[in-house]
Length: 373
Ligand SMILES: Nc1ncnc2c1ncn2[C@@H]1O[C@H](COP(=O)(O)OP(=O)(O)OP(=O)(O)O)[C@@H](O)[C@H]1O
Image (tube, rainbow, N blue to C red; front, side):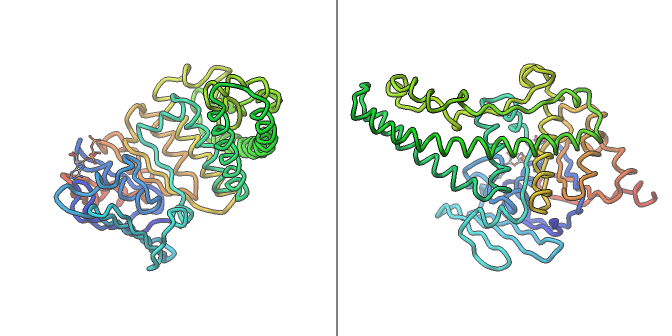
């Protein structure tokens, strides 16, 4: 499946617009402030129900009006729509003409990856982003993960409430109740770690297969390692930590503290790679997710890259876009300032659609060199 038609109105500075998308590559280019990120945001909204720039959809609505709406039609005849009304802060989602109340119903149709300057958090920030990355795969490919995760979260919440109720003292009544919670927590923790280890193996294989067709200087040296958030014996760790846990009011060990360590020849990628290399790696990690998803569920994906060319030299731009382009299951949407740096695209990929974004209007740019090729 791919998005074939798109239209939107009322999004940020964009005029009402409507256009057809290529099944493969779509490039939106234009000056600073023209509306490139806004059009990518609008497309991402129709498939994911979320903005990658803000959690407050009222900011997405053009400041002069009260609502925005985005619509898309796929090649296989499905229709998706999302509207948002500033006054009552409500969004309305329609799939194939029917109103749906759950965001997850929308997101399962066309899994969407968005890469923006914030995506560096995957490498540079704390483990929370990397846990999200791992769990994103699990939510999509392993249906039993969600109930196990929910059960773990609920046990953890109750254990933390008990720790806080102890008011700093480890008395026998609290110890007895902690014994019960710890047993349940350990069982759920083991199941979560198992799922995550398993999905990480699949991700590593997907990454390996992508790297076979790509030559970036650090590609042979990447390793992904799972740290479960506790040493081997969680039960013993929880017992050891009890007094510390009571003092802080939080459980200090468990899968909620897990990390995915991304390493290059033994060094953490965060401390070792340049910004451009990090950008390449982040793209590859998300691409590995889409491959895994395709293998496990048969689903195609949408790949949105805001400000694609920044930080990347010509070789890396070509290597990355070529790798993305080779994936049959991925529809790509990128933005960049100038088309000049992507001149090589015109002759190589005549299926690409180019759009010039100018003061909020979008015009399809006709690629004369590809028409003659
Ligand atoms: N709610 C809104 N209503 C109207 N205009 C808005 C709204 N939110 C942002 N804008 C304006 O929309 C314009 C387009 O912003 P956008 O971030 O899409 O530009 P861009 O083409 O991606 O720019 P850059 O290359 O600098 O990243 C900006 O001038 C911004 O101030």
